[in-house]
Length: 369
Figure 1 (cartoon, one colour):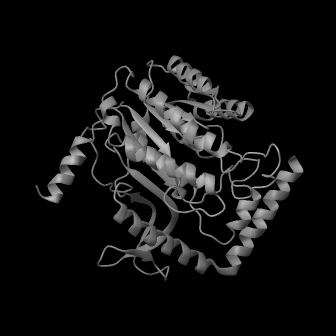
Figure 2: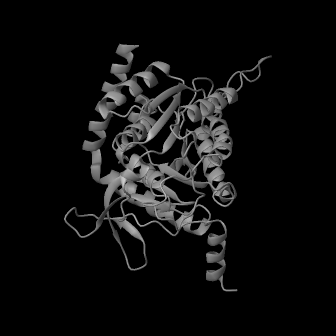
Figure 3: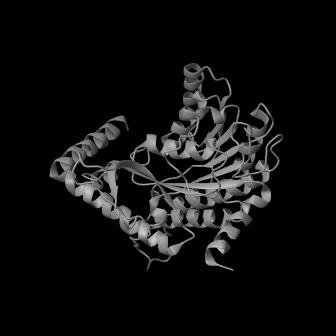
């Protein structure tokens, strides 16, 4: 059997959809009446997902450890969107029983008694204890262990969410099993798990070892599930944002990133909406980067357009093929080359503007504390 036909056979066996066409924009109304569960939904990406999908008419239940922020956000968006089917439930993703209760409550709150999409979004950038890279006092009688909060939230929490999602999604009444050949205008509800990774799941992140390790693990989770979750009728997708300013980005990180090009929350929401709204997107991973004008050469390699007036296309969404190591390595070289060149073009002026913003942000946080 030829290699090409073997590949197509594998894709068909695991119900994987064809490569994504980012020029084809999904309709937001396709999320209307879906019940969507989001962990870590009180701020950052989760809050942005909630707002976009609430406007589109989805039933959204968010979970978070920040009760005040989550409750206020939901109350505000109910008034703003006139959508009564928005709910907050306390959830600590590192606590198994807390997640169990969260899923059960979401099913009770769902108008149709089921869950259509689960977004494993909860995450932190780092803990507050002893960093892995800074061991100290290990010759003491009772040396302190490294702070594993990042792994507990980003990995253990995501695994708990995934385990519960695979149970509840296949018990979603009136839903259709995942099918990349379906017509989303006719099949409105299915079973979808969306994992939130990071480009740190593909690239090394010096100084952020545990964060990088946790996100590499999420990519591994996706790579395994994309070929097996169809047996539960579930489609699994992954989005991997580049550096983005959210509540996770503290003043120190903002200072380190000063002068760099960054992705935006809007771009991350666009990628998540594409996966959630379009039922035909099955087993795909999307990298979300800064929106930059890029040009493609005759060999299919992309590079940054040096002149803003030059021909090219504005791109912020790229498809990643983590099952193919060769393509993955090519992708890394191409993307980092583009981002580094864009950072060089911003120069010292861009660095100074961002550094000032980082200092002001840190002072505001200090003043409020």
